[in-house]
Length: 306
Image: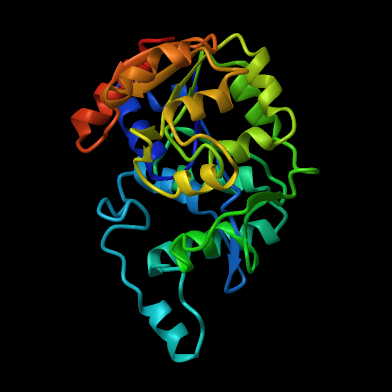
């Protein structure tokens, strides 16, 4: 059994490569829900949907999110009604959010609804929300605290980051399925996702970090930072705002208490010795996933470390 910790496009790309090497039934994916937000009365789970849509082969590859070929008639009508439509939701995508919200209001957990959605999309991968409890990531700016999606999408990551708040982390708990996925795994893969607002959120849920320390699994992570810059997203701005070094070493240090192997890009080969002093084995390879061949090659490099 393989368990991955995931959030967003980078994770979805690596998972695509992994599924060329292992059966879907052998893979569990614990997904960040700190990005979850309520809009138009609907429960939106951006990272859960990116992972599900990508693995189901229906994602908009150009954008990395949403459903390919989707239309936006509903959003157009929202605009006519004077609504703020900064968060782009396609018509087919909205069906997912309507279904999720409907089932949650019927008393189902987010884990149960996610399983229903994935099954309907033909997936056998065990996709798990990091928690069924309310959890939101907020970013502190000079003008106040805003939801991460507002910072990321509406504000286009503008403004100096003064801090990051995990609203709900004091009470949020992982589901039994999440704990079992970590403790029963042979290898745990920490995907190349934002270390603060994707992986950091998962690690902040009570018991998850301790489970990674206690697990018999070999824990392998892929750096989302290459040559001092994120491959995608605002990880550099968030890390810098928290006073962290924006580098592969900086990410390795965040994971050092549970990590066995860290995969870094060839452009960061000079970081190898410094990271190894943290007690972590380092593997150097290409981590850019521009093609399916790249995704499979990186997945092979990661899984060969189990």
